[in-house]
Image (cartoon, rainbow, N blue to C red):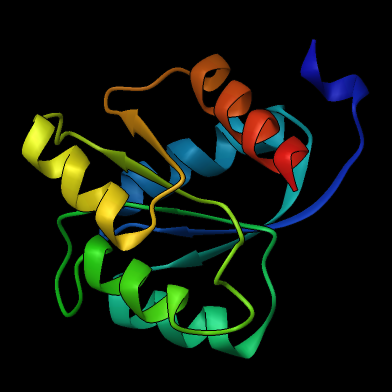
Length: 130
């Protein structure tokens, strides 16, 4: 039972699918992460990340306006997000895509479909690193 943990981390989730954001938000809330902000695409994600400070960002790769890689590159170029954990939640699983993610500074990879347990485990792991 994750809910016994009180999590005071601010999280940003960036995905163009409303259903996926809802599912991810639910999973994070179950894990005790209640400070979750949502962005609808990469450009929205950059704007929201620049207007507040998040402890962790979870992003999709394939999105309109700016994709996940462009989002990560833009955030890694800022002092605020140069070292903060950024996870991707995506259907992409090729070695080529993972190498590209690593090259732009991605912290970790979660593949869809996901379980609440898989997401919470990954979130806890990267937030403990800080």
